[in-house]
Amino acid sequence: MATEGDLWGNELLWDHLIVDSDGAHVGMVDDLELVEQGDGDGPVLTAILCGPMAFGPRIGGRLGVWWTAIGRRLRPGDEPYPPRIPLSSVKAIESTGVTLAVIREQLPTGALEDWLQEKLIQQIPGSGT
Image (cartoon, rainbow, N blue to C red; front, side, top):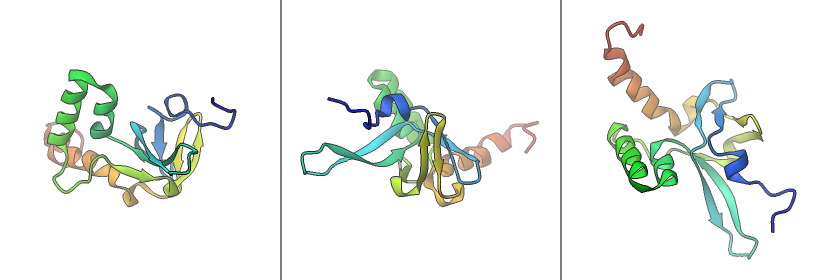
């Protein structure tokens, strides 16, 4: 039975914006990492997961498999997936989103966006970059 203090990921976290300590866009909450503590109190939130490799399994079915495959093909080879933001890096969780205590460059979440910008977007004539 849920109590008033319980945090429901599907209501308060999934699909919410993540911003760094400077207010820069980091990504969206695509999934949550929960770890069973073994004390019978249930799982504990340990990290926020971002990107297609986190979102695909949440979608499920053929669309989820397709989404995950696209993310796997587009990501840089050395990027850990799914990008994981430890709860220790989270400053605040609010109804408007998640604010981090660190800057974007200290996280693994920007590598796909940076790679896409360099390899794809900048190659488009008139992209303005």
